[in-house]
Image (cartoon, rainbow, N blue to C red):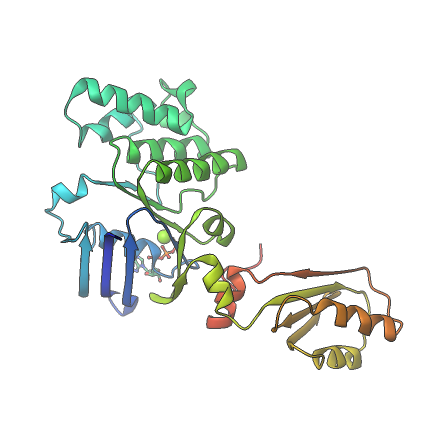
Length: 315
Ligand SMILES: Nc1ncnc2c1ncn2[C@@H]1O[C@H](COP(=O)(O)OP(=O)(O)OP(=O)(O)O)[C@@H](O)[C@H]1O
Ligand SMILES: [Mg+2]
């Protein structure tokens, strides 16, 4: 039987005139790696801060572990590990002392705490830096320390708000692997990000949000199957007359076509085997191209189809 760990119903949060959360709802089951995916400013951190009762809200209901969450519910907070978007550690404490401090908020027993602190430091792979102060750490290592501080007390629910932003690839992989590992050991995870690749890599359930609203949610496959787009065909071609663009746009299953900067992008519905028709068209019309390939839809295509814009500006 499934067990709901977090339930948010019709949450409304305003910052003066701005509606940051607009009747936002979600439900997270035990054992999930729940991805909250949305562009900058869509309301991910606001959602997290409301769930944790760090922020007051205007309307709605929040339950954690089946109980109404309030700032005074220390018993519930103890079961949650939080890794904030902005790194929050003490500069004057060493790596080890920092982890011990945060773990000490929940674990009073000294011996047990020592064991937990060692395990957390080892888990994120910063053993060599135990005696370092945070200022001496690279951005990636600092993130890992931030994570160690959040998870040392072995919480059942772990919330990570964009833990891989501005992190080197090695630390990023270590962090993503670590999250999967914590989940395998039984923790339920909430993971916010605006990187669709990461969310797809580790999340069992994905909620896409925009402007404070839940625009869709499901597994990555469910989300992709829910849209019209089934295949994107890209042709790198230096010169192509508009009449050809128009003609390709009329091929079976093609519903959108753009030609910009030597790149023809053809959006198709109706399966994954439209590329042969496009190749045939080029052959029949004796047109030369550099490269032609086909891609399956991504979560960006899901976002694009629902909101009319890209998940993030092209980098
Ligand atoms: N303290 C605040 N006062 C006023 N407006 C705020 C405040 N915090 C957030 N906002 C606004 O609320 C909206 C949602 O912000 P939020 O930080 O929750 O988004 P986010 O999805 O976490 O974005 P990011 O990816 O940049 O972290 C944004 O428009 C933001 O500018
Ligand atoms: Mg945020």
